[in-house]
Image 1 (cartoon, rainbow, N blue to C red):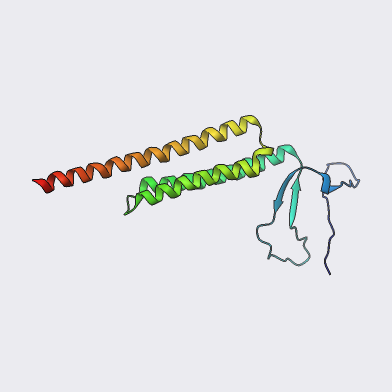
Image 2: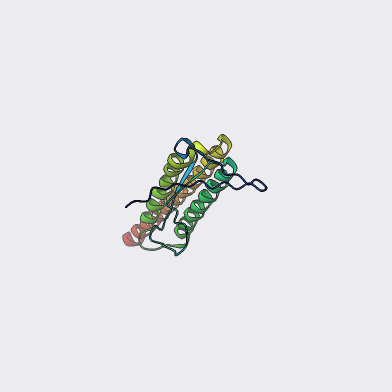
Length: 156
């Protein structure tokens, strides 16, 4: 037996009325539960939410973008801190993550963002890409210098 009961929660300060909406026709930001295994006694289990308040959608998207941006910056920080055996692999991984972030933002959030938000996000992404490619060029030059020094020492 499947329970296909759907609810819409509307909270207004001093109104004591119930509002019904055709939720299938509402346009909003879809959110699904990340952890579907949680079952609490005497609680409402929520599988999916549709946020229709534009200001709340904007705040939610900004929070998600900022979290992803922070994770990207942490990855980029490891590139600068780590001078391990294969820094090229870390740089390629960072470039892939930046590209993945860009595609994810375009696919998931573009219809909910204003032009100004898109412009700022695009600037941030371009700065990240430029930073990673600059680091790649720097590491490549360092490697070439080391090889040159090795060759001159070897020939002497």
